[in-house]
Amino acid sequence: MRRVIKYAVFAILFVVLAFGSGFYFTLRSLNNGSDISPRDSSGTDEYLEGRLNILVLGLDAGTIGADEEHNRHRSDTMMVFSVDPKEKKVNVLSIPRDTRVRIPGVGYQKINAATAYGGPELAVKTVKNFLGVPIHHYVTVNYSGFRKIVDAMGGIEINIEKRREYHDNAGGLHIDLQPGLQVLDGEKAEQFVRFRQYPEGDLGRVKAQQKFMEAALKTLLKPSTLLRLPQIVQAVQESVSTDIEPIQMMKLANIARQIQYDNVKMYILPGEGQYIGGVSYFIPYKSEMAKVVKEVFHGENANVKVAVLNGSGYAGIARKVAQKLEEMGFTVVRVANADSFDYDTTTIIYPREKREDAEKIAKVFANARMKEEESPEENLTTIIVGKDAQGD
Image (cartoon, rainbow, N blue to C red):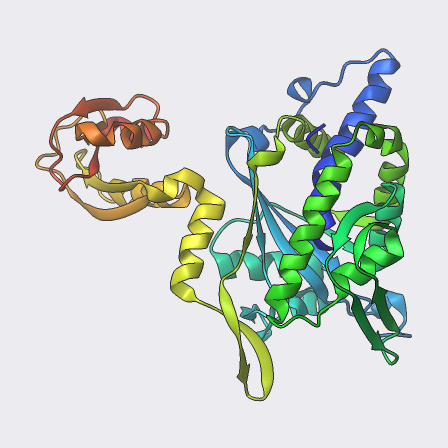
């Protein structure tokens, strides 16, 4: 078994939403004599075609004492899970709650305010614009739900290096955790993930949450957790809001059970704290952020540089191909016309040392021809787009 506030969300998303809800439901159905394997279900195979990006939001308590129907919750935790079904890998990017971004229809604010202004839908739109990547689904859970889920898991074993103590009487938050190896129940786990008094500020908090996530994963890898799946599923169903449909959860389950612990990588948005207009924000380092976004959402493709040349004569087709490649993470360094417009078949020209890059690019096209020779572009893999690309 290889698998939602804070970093325990990974466990909930892949073991409960996917493996829990999907697999448990599947087992129950099989016991009743029916066959509902994900590959036999109706619907599209979007989870098998490319990366799947899921925004996970841990919501705060909102305004204390406010009518819950009209309460405005901010996202106390924001992460994007990028799932690569083919490679069976998952990258997790944590976005600090104080990150300064432009919220559509609102203006520049801390990113955690998006849910307060427009719920998870506006948060999805904000993150999509901010990172420049598609967001396919969202998952939200509040603190109460987080406690229920951790308790349903039987607690999380973790080593606390030193005492964590903080009291906020106005906000009703009291944290007092002793050092040492211990099992945190839902209440203590909430204290651990909400503690903020770190020298590095929000980054220190994120690192602590990553440690909690790793501990949650180890707990979920224990065989005894299988016996707790019914309780975990019930806790999730009572606590989680998501736009992922049940049949889609089953597809996620099929993916999640194939993901190895070592194929899960965690990232933190690079940046630093700054005051702007008297308000404390987290400001990303743009150049470093671009590199992290490429690595998280495009994986190994991010290191592949390619030139795209129009050899078909069809106006705009090279730009269209280049855009498609960029969406898949490839780095397009040049778009231009080829030496002629007489290419019927799309041709990938590569120097010997770039064969691996060429093979990755060839997967994008149905019938591309590969040709090893010195590239027209210095030591680059070059795509000459042929007339056949009209059908791709």
